[in-house]
Image (cartoon, one colour):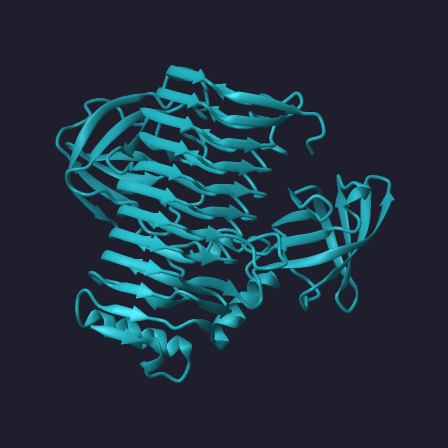
Length: 516
């Protein structure tokens, strides 16, 4: 079945998308063609929720409300749930959202292709202003800021960025905001600690959201292809995959809208407990509020409830990144990891698994652990995709560009520029409840330009185990070869710890005395 969006009935674009989704379900291998143009998608309740978040009606940080398994007060726009073989072609089409949405939802699907779509927001999930004046009063700086957007008297400010227009570089969290109050109209007085006078005349961005529903959700799906997708802004992450197998992304751009310097509020992409292959080629990331990509599975605490039966609780401090239970499949391998060191232990096979009403997961394993479980975590080591990150570019963003917590990974032929922290990090992280340690990683033929601008760690590559004890050998083979690294004077370029077999060779390093 071939469907032209212009021919789909509906009183507005949101209703037309719902009706198009229903038509696509009628027949496998259906195609939806969305003609070039700007499609505004809005609703009264969606706009109200968006503005309520900014006005702090859900607290300074709304994440605990928005990223909660019980939160269902949101709208999916293009919902492809349960479809097989669906292909959506949207070259030149922009979905312009006005309000809080989950724009694209791909759940319980197989063989899905989405091509060419652009996602953006009419009222951005951040606010942009110009710093007009700067005056220091003891330890507090007072800055007069004129915002582009209409602002409420009181609003939340989760994270800030100062964009230095003279050099085209973003500085994330350059000071601590102590308070903001209106002067008149769109001008506000901002009080901050740790601010320097050179911020005056530059643009200030304030994020109002952290994690929430993603722009594109891949949940419990198989063989998904995203081609030529652009995400200019979103109140959360860009693309999130969870419990999905074989994801192929080519030409994804998570970049600011024209004239802006920031894009998504948190990670550009994030993949948790996925299987098979995860390939990202020819992608561009710019200005997002966290990592460009994070690939991991979760650590779980365990409670024994019978012989070989355990109740698992996901240890991710923010909860699973889709707010769904991280439930393994029969046949998956669950490995024990020692608390404090993340040393790997015995491996068991899942025979049965189900989700309880409170979100915990019960698994029946092929054997009993045989000793007290309270000193260990479980992790699903089957849900660790082979990861390829090739010919991509990441620049001017908060946190890391590539965060690797899967067995096998290749990062090749990429360019990393002015990242806030180390560009490529290989590390299981006990605090975040995210793992696992790696077996084979190659980082080769890349260019690193003045990365880790604010971080204290290595500029280009860091390999370590972020556990409580930070001791032992958890990683297997790591090769860092033939990379060009331009780095700030005095900053290390490559650091490798907790690794059995490390190869570092053929890298060319240039010290930059004027990096900033």
